[in-house]
Image (tube, rainbow, N blue to C red):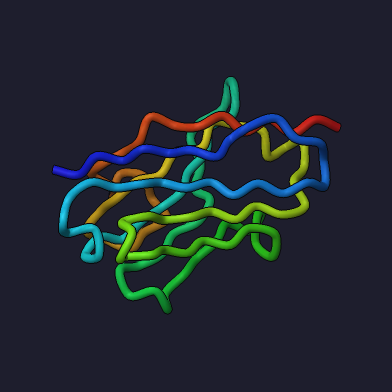
Length: 122
């Protein structure tokens, strides 16, 4: 069992930066692939970024590539999402997830956090 707790969301203006954190419980964090997803009001949950248990494998959605950076610190059981040059369309609830498989699909992830709200004003 893995419990995930996100933090770092907030209200910012367009062009600003935020760093989201996701703290995981359990001693097996390093064996999980970790993902970030987001869901805007009235829209389906969408993939943002993923990082394999081996940090060299990363993948981003086209909408955030070049602006967002995913990273992990296995010693701290934490995964991060650095978000730069934020846009109003980045407004959503952001969720982190843990799974056995490095994937862009939400169904591949077994554990989910409760989400953190990110609001970007224009």
